[in-house]
Image 1 (cartoon, helix red, strand yellow):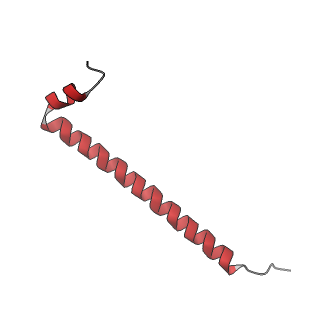
Image 2 (cartoon, one colour; image 1 turned 60 degrees about the horizontal axis):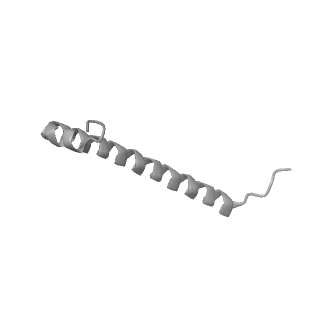
Length: 57
């Protein structure tokens, strides 16, 4: 005999999956944005990079 479907549980699971997927996408976009910003700063003025880089000091 098949089980009785629990629509509220299934909807909650789908909603959690959507939220998780959105968070992963936002995190990935933020990381890509940070990477582009770092490249832009590095290309714009290399002296600033060497002054702010603690490894160089």
